[in-house]
Length: 128
Length: 178
Image (cartoon, rainbow over all chains, first blue to last red; front, side, top):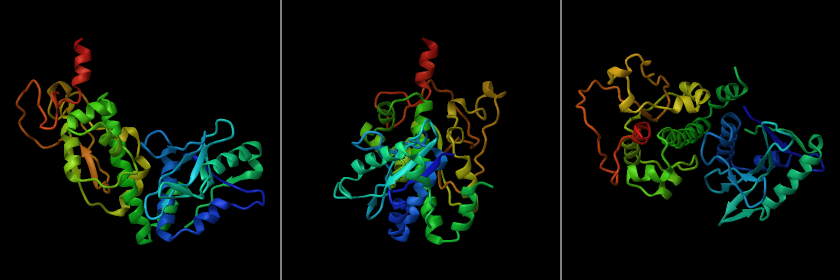
């Protein structure tokens, strides 16, 4: 099993959990299903489970539907841990991310987690 | 009992939840099994494309857990290319948890007809092919188990192949011969 973490911002808010709560029920279930796959199967066996973005170290998860969810995450990033950190919730509309620079922001957040993991991440919150 | 299993037992009482999970797992299962079977044949996507009469780009699209528009016709073409039988079944949700838990390269692997011990005396000492006892795999590519008479043939040619023998282990055999 892989471990999942959520990014926590400077005000100690779990913005990924907040973003998830704002989704419609069907989308929340689809997202949860993908995250369970990632946690259970990891990145190696299922082809296409993680997709690289243009930002180094940042991957997106594809969750089909309307809207298309594209949560962004990274491996670890602390040491060689068998973990992922969910950095930002995003959607893809007409080939653009919403928020627009979600991948860049995810890269910034990854660095924050790397610099201070105790402050900037916590165990993933499962949202039903 | 794992945390994930506990979650499934609680959350699957919701209709949408259990069906979305089952559909997502079905897509993951098929795409991953295609990749596992292709790799066991030591085929590139290009080679599998030739065996099935598809384009490599198409194989790439299908070998992706995010693809969700499977057709039986397409799956049958893969079954022929791998010389396996395609099994399509409806299953209860009770078996989902076990199958999800067992999901691995090993459980996705299947023995092609050419090496199926049921049909080949030289493989009699090999263990019998394990029947898939999972109850919820809606679409699985499985070993042939029907008792049919086999006429020895040097090679069986697939209607989809383009100038290639439709034997998934052909390349392995060629390597052994050389």
